[in-house]
Image (tube, rainbow, N blue to C red; front, side, top):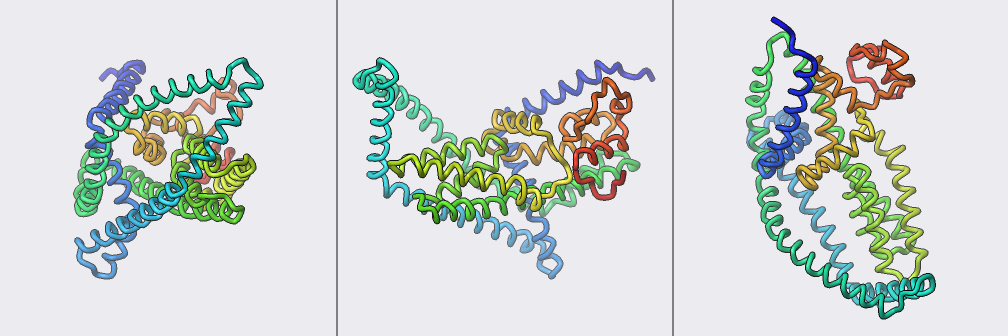
Length: 383
């Protein structure tokens, strides 16, 4: 049988990617709860197995991890709402501080431009009216979004319970898609995917905890108002790679400006956030997560933005573990191995234009590149 031309193969691959993305967009309300439930069920698997080892009935061994997870979410929600309540109680002082900052900005604009205070007020009023119109439309959309969010949250524990109940059935379904000679490779992919998902998501839970305590605690010791709220908001926003840290810095600055009449606390907040981020990125998170699969920065940023465009906040949050799983699958497939290279962080020191060895799909070449980039090798692989 004549082999299919390479251009046709690549066209089919790109068409498949397009169809998958279109399916996710069209069936977002169905697909995203299932994907989120899949990742949560992977995280809860160790607890489920523990309860099964001590002879708990299957249903109870599934229910208890879900109950623990729900309790944890409720506690986080209570802590967050209590901090927001403290912010609301300081609203009169916040209003006074904002007016003072606006007056200072107005005087500064007067000193460097020809715009008078009256013209500035007219401009602010016009923009405020536009903002109110936009906010009204946004709130109308938020009402619809809130109902879909509530449905999303309500479906999650049900899906998690069912996935853990029928996990053996789902595994059998996966193995039946492949011929027997590939079952060992499929088993490797499933085992490594489970390891990386657990490592990543449990690491994120630990990261939220220590970021809130570390950042909020330092800011509190330095006398910054609403320190814990800044800490918890930054910790959650930091879950979104690259983009979240930038938004977290902006939120910290805005909250500090609203709570203080001076600029010194803003500089303190920015310096503390930079210090905590340095510890998180270079010392704490690499030791906690220790992922065996590295995704390059370009793939991460594009993946986060694409996830947000396709499925909103949940898509941004889940983009990194999904990309990591995709890389595991691509690396073990001869057809899709180039896509695994595109997503990975095994950056050659020299150009493939000058070295024909770097143009090959060989696993030995990949191992050498991983060593050269200080990437931890996967278990069971050697150079």
